Image (cartoon, rainbow, N blue to C red; front, side, top):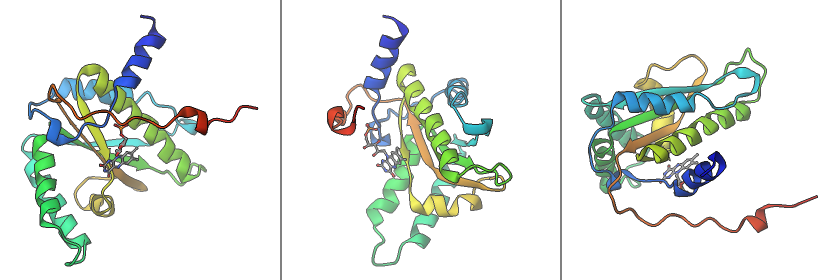
Amino acid sequence: MNSFEILTEVINNRQSIFPSSFTREDISKEDIFKILNNANQAPSHKHTEPWRFHIVSGTAKEKFSEFAQKSYKNYVSADKFKQSKFDKLARKIKMSSHVIMIGCKHDVEVNLPQWEEVAAVSCAVQNIYLSATAAGFGGYWSSPGFIIANANKYFKMEEDEVCLGLFYIGIPKDILPPQVVKRDLVDKVKWY
Ligand SMILES: Cc1cc2nc3c(=O)[nH]c(=O)nc-3n(C[C@H](O)[C@H](O)[C@H](O)COP(=O)(O)O)c2cc1C
């Protein structure tokens, strides 16, 4: 296979894999670092490299889990609170090898619209998705409002850094839910 074919295969094999499909084995720190190194190769306008990663693993997961549950409880009104969601939150963190908080630093001194920085971070996250797939790992990007709003209470974030959610990562079980089939490209492209 040439490199285009290899890349196409990785892209086509990628799917969001949720913690309920993780084996609970841990990924090594070295492998996480390699994946983040690939994330770090993403493009960014004016070379701002706005992606930031805060990694939760091992015993830190328990404290993070408490923080996530507390954030959820405080964020929703009593009538919207769901005990099942509260419990699932802790389970997802426990099932994951690592939880990566995705930060986006929007340096206001650099005159770029925020969407460009968010787009650059999204490119970095896609590199995480693809690298995880190629390495035999799995994960997904989660964007819970209650974490995004409270992230600075837990993580050591920089000035002008915002949270764009969490990437849960782990080792997938052999049998996974079917992939999401994307709608036809023909309807999304206009040629001129
Ligand atoms: C910016 C972004 C935010 C997302 N947030 C969530 C989320 O909060 N919860 C969730 O279940 N999936 C989330 N996802 C994952 C999508 O649900 C998933 O990508 C979609 O279902 C398509 O499936 P696929 O990734 O397997 O192609 C998010 C994806 C992106 C790109």
